[in-house]
Image (cartoon, rainbow, N blue to C red):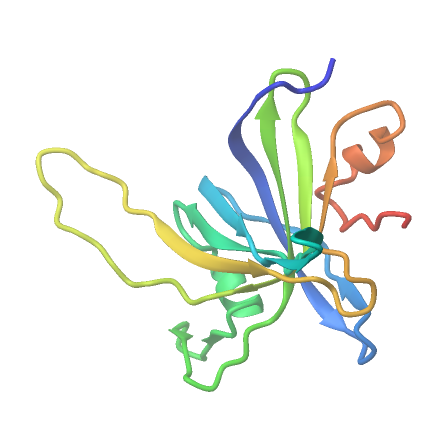
Amino acid sequence: MANKIKYGIQNVYYAKATDDGTGTLTYSTPVAWPGAVSLSLDAQGDTNTFYADNIAYYTSAANNGYQGDFESALIPDTFRTNILGETLDAKGFYVEKSNATNSEFALLFQFEGDDKATRHCLYRCIASRPAASGSTQEESVEPQTETITITAMPRINDKLIKARCPYTSSTSSAYATWFSTVNEPTV
C-alpha cells in the first residue's frame, strides 16, 4: 500500500558536499541533526507562456530547486562549524567571522506516512545564518527554537535537485542505508 498521507519530520541528517572543480559533488558521511520541528520549502522557478494563434501555444516551467525554512530545537555545533563556517578557538569559543564561507551540503530527512516513511535527499543546499533570539521564562518553560533558511539548488554537473525513496522491495537496500551515505540515483 502506498502512503496516502504524510506527517512528522524526523531523521534529519546533513552531509558536507565537496566540489571536485568540475561541478561533481562528493559527500561526507551524513551527520545526525536531532530536534527537527518543521521543514517548509517552496518550489523555486517560474512558468513562461508563449502565445500564438490566439492561444497559449507553448508553456515552459523552470525548476530552480526549493527555498524555505527548517526549524529545529537547536542548530548543532557541528553544522555551525562544518557548514556555516564558524571556528572553534583555543579557548573553546565558537567564533563567527564576517568573511566566513558557507559550505554546500546534502540534506536528508524523512516524513512519516500511513504505510512507510518516505526518505528524501536534497543534494545541493546552502544555509543562511540563524537569527539570535530568546525570551524570558514565565510561569512555565517554553522551548525556543532556531530557524535557518535553506536553498536547495540543482547540481551543476547533472542538474539533480532531489530524490525520494519510499520503501519497496526494489528500494530496500538504498532505504536501509539512506542516512549512512548520500545515495546517488541511477539516471
